[in-house]
Image 1 (spheres, rainbow, N blue to C red):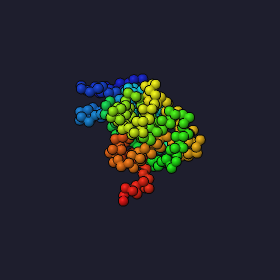
Image 2: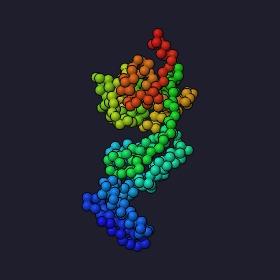
Image 3: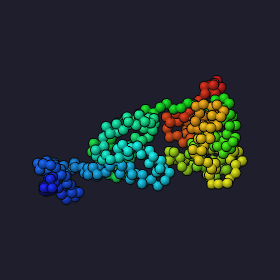
Image 4: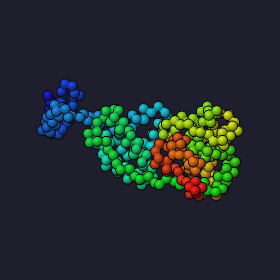
Length: 320
């Protein structure tokens, strides 16, 4: 049965039914409190009642923080926290119950004025992932459905590849920083990401099988990378003075790469373009899509296509 009582300047309705959590809500008018209690009792009796109190109490900020605290990998937690920071600033105080599609649309549009569409997609995707975890694993109800919004279209994938002579120019320019020179060669030979290269360890090399194991990847799925003769020869010449193969920071690689390009007049080339170059070379050597995906770690054909740019002149001999 419902209990209606005056609590300071409000009328509080309490509903207690065996087998259900007690429910309470305050109203300015006694008639509203009575009506709410009767409707709630009827819903419970019909078996259609959904307890939204958890969704009302839990804010976007608290939800994201709970998700972040559940990540054991500190590097991944730091990365996710960085992605979540603008979401927290804009929507952190909003409760999950009050969070709407409009909130997300306004956040998207405001973010697009400040950063690129890919960055906005990442931030929206993180929020969507956290909301789904709250619903599926923490039993937080979303009576009106999990809020969603149309994501901005990603820009077309870059098609920058090394032009004739640029590779040799780049390696010559990097002779002053041999460790980065080695990283560049290894990137072209393996299509590994910058983060994977700088974290690679000697203990993960299977010399007999010519395989480098990558336990931590961007996609979260470990993979094995076959080593070409040039990659293997490079490793055999290097000193093994520390645990990591290259012993250099990610930002140091990018900075040295940019300086080297500038010294020899190479324009519009980024370090990540080497992954495009390497992936395209694998196809030009005759590997099929599944074989290339196994090496590069791409999960979908769509993403693989974004990194693949074949030269028509290199395909002429293969079509007869």
